[in-house]
Amino acid sequence: MKRIEVKLALPVVAPLLDVIKGMADSLRRSLAAPLGLTDLDADYGTAWADELVAAQNEDVKTLLALFNEGFFREGVIAFDEDNAEQIVRATAAVRLRLREYYLKPLADESLESGNVELEELDESLRKAFMCYLFLATIQELIIQHLDSSILES
Image (cartoon, rainbow, N blue to C red):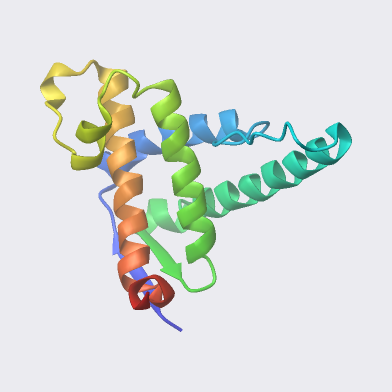
């Protein structure tokens, strides 16, 4: 089984975890990307949305589990074929929520290119942006090194 271990600098990542946890809390009751379920029966649509929120919460729980006691002791997180898909979905959900709550003042092109003058951002926006980039890096690592189905297509 393929496995990636990444050593992270605790002083850099620890403040970003507060941002991730805040976004995880905001995702507990709603989807990161709301569905347009207007064509469905109300009860069916509600049940479906509830299942999707529950799955999203499991994905985010898997992401947060990377930053356990071992991480704070050794500074290492690990991805493998068993958790990669859940982590990619969770990082996508958190990134979408960051865009919605914090990063609206930044243009999409700036967000995706990382071309932002950090010194010009206030502290909360800077921290949210750094978290956004951190999660993008996690996604890229998984896609490049673990998800061969994406690379083969």
